Length: 407
View (tube, helix red, strand yellow):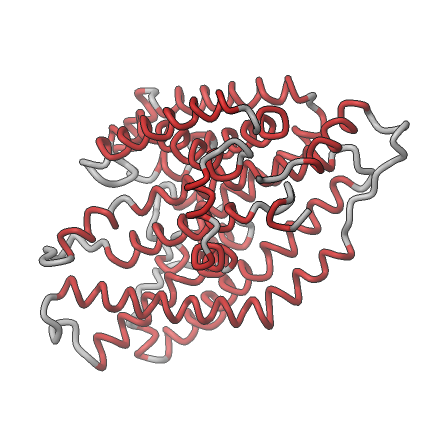
């Protein structure tokens, strides 16, 4: 079975990552309410304002992939050690490289070099930095979202890390039926919490409270987990494909309707929109990877440009904001923001330059930094007890997982 057809690595999943990071980049690079768009900008700006929704795709993908890994490995004798070691190799090097560069290079230089001082790194001390070192930044930036602008996207990484911290124990200790009920209950509870009057009141004061606070934004990860449990058993059922097609187009229409008032913190989004986005992202994932899914979705997200972008998506997500800030500073210094036909199109051009530079840096990082580090995963392989010793439920699920392929 080829790697791209194996349960362990669906090629379309990388393509979905690529599409998700592309939408996030469009939101950060091309949205600027300070300028009025003209020409092509009138078409680009409304689409870019929806780009923040790509984060929800990341959440569903993470829940799907991590739960799939844990379900296959939960009978392993070295279950926890291998999982956390492999997660640490994937996440920590790039994450802490970025944090160290900001706190140990950019901030000190900003105090002594005028060029670096131009960047709005924020006013912060050891207390503010600690939230990033321990990967709990979402809990603080839910109230102060632009505390450290270059690290503002790290809130979603913090939510995922908190999920990774507790989820292996949940999967290990619950049977699949109980785990499914747990996920469904968690999705309902998260949606209900978002609609509580006092939560909505706090969100009016702190506009990122619901968006970044973990219990209020956990349903995407849980729905991804549900899909991971469903796929081995129901992935080849054509009648289920019809259900997900209807769900996809229905939620897509709802997303477009809700996006009339753009942004993640509008009442429509916080009350209903997040739940709709979760179902939209989940149905798109199912149609892309299920054996009975959509051939067109699989072809689109298996395209080489999206797959390659997905491969580099983690580095790009972590570093795109520092690149963007300094590209804009350099552009304003050497070119002048008013030298172009329109200020908004200047921003678009700076965003395109930033994307090219960030992509190049990600490719270099993969070659000389991330790739060599990830190669150490070979030292952390799951070990399983003899088949007769392992729990029969685990064994059946493990066998099914190894048989899945995409036609």
